[in-house]
Length: 251
Ligand SMILES: Nc1ncnc2c1ncn2[C@@H]1O[C@H](COP(=O)(O)OP(=O)(O)OP(=O)(O)O)[C@@H](O)[C@H]1O
Ligand SMILES: [Mg+2]
Image (cartoon, rainbow, N blue to C red):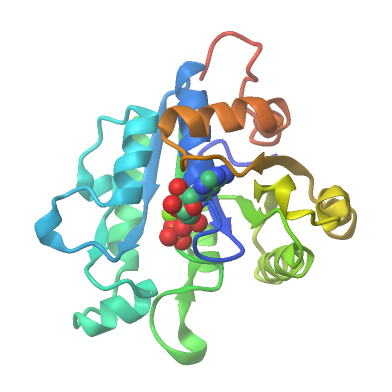
């Protein structure tokens, strides 16, 4: 049975749509009455003088209507747009894990279910170096969270999705589902028709949705509409063992 505590939303790359999916899902689940926590464990590329709420964390918090303080939702913020372990090293920090784990424990204590957004892809380092790098797969294991993988909808995604799922599996992480993002029919890419089925077939993991490219870029409301219209919320709820969208009452 899947963990009742939450899910880590990872991706096949940076910029692939993790925040968009997490934000859409958070708003839809919050509207369903779920008591949701949200977390962006490490956010980089955010100068401190721009405020306590960096972009991804601010969107997640708004979407979930989370009352939690920034030190829980985004325990680490780094100025430079780098992988967490690199940004941390450049600021002379070597250990990020403890603060993330205790922030998550606080959130999990106050909410029934928590959406955690990764950074970049699953093998991106959080702390350490070389073969001793602690990455987002380690964090998923530490927090006992299964994974939702966000990939791109277009040509090239089979390889990226399979590599991410394969890495997750070899590290002992549970992958519950995929979402493909950014489908743009005007590109005339014939791969998009078969990509979801091929990914599911090879990995044995369901693809819960293919989200279209929209213009302008998604807000909380339009990200929620993408999830409502293009994502199998019922299958997601069953996979995380929580009441589905038709049950009328959240956890
Ligand atoms: N379906 C979509 N249609 C239009 N724009 C999108 C869509 N999905 C994402 N975007 C835009 O693409 C950019 C990257 O998306 P997003 O921030 O969700 O990616 P990410 O995987 O969270 O990135 P990061 O690794 O930086 O956290 C954002 O500007 C977002 O608004
Ligand atoms: Mg993001």
